Image (cartoon, rainbow, N blue to C red; front, side, top):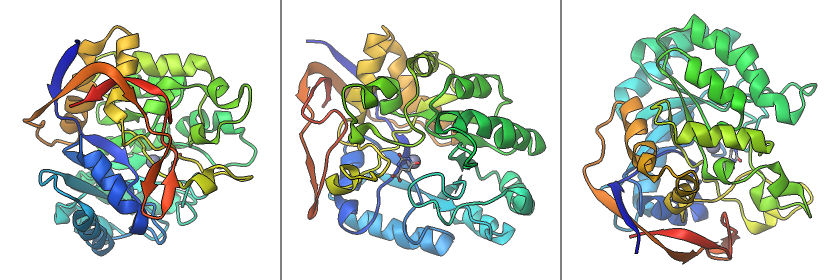
Length: 343
Ligand code: DOR
Ligand code: ZN
């Protein structure tokens, strides 16, 4: 039996939700991660330290065991986030970053930013307090095709921003294109990217050929195969700018299997086995540990975890569905055999 031991991972990008959804999502990730960067796109969003403290308390109350688990909170950047909000966040120790959603780009982004021009003092405060900016990198310009929105965002917004604020640490979240891989690889230090399991495992053909598969619909949307291959090369490259961020984001089966389905894939039940499968296919299992357990901690300037976990090569059935209180969620690779299991 093939077994590998790696440092216990973290998840540098996850949606835990709230209310009925919270219990399962937090316990699923705490089963394998010591830390998780918790996205703030609730309704209403997590806008300031008080909101973050209250949400943190609800997360801790939903945990069943896992005393080591540490939720790292984020604030939702809005047009009215002030430098004082940033100062309070930086001093709170609970908040590890601020998330930029272009208004209308994705789930619960209505309160997002309509333009960065007026936010210069806020972004400068993030730079001076060394509070990272986490970016959903897509333009929302209706004239830009959805498959080009990430590349256009780099050109119009991200490249100028990383030049104008040379010390601001920036994470381009859930990258989906070769354009993003190249941008991040060539960017100044302090610019990094997270990569999800779905963008490493699937391309848009998997979602659309032979019928539409709503459980593979996420944002940014899956791209053509060439981009998946570039993401795989980045993940296995050993370049510390690329690290794990699952973007696990539960939606109920009814809201996914709908005439206007929600964006998001749920992977927290099996994230590390999913990544392991990719790294094994790329004959790079030796690079898995740094991607899942070292580079993100280094970027966020947190200690690497001390504990280890074992991954075993064994058939591992991904369930058809998962219960989230009264709701049902269809997870990634539902009803299919995964090749690895975490022990
Ligand atoms: O697919 C996605 N789902 N992308 C996002 O940016 C948000 C997320 C969610 O919250 O459901
Ligand atoms: Zn996300």
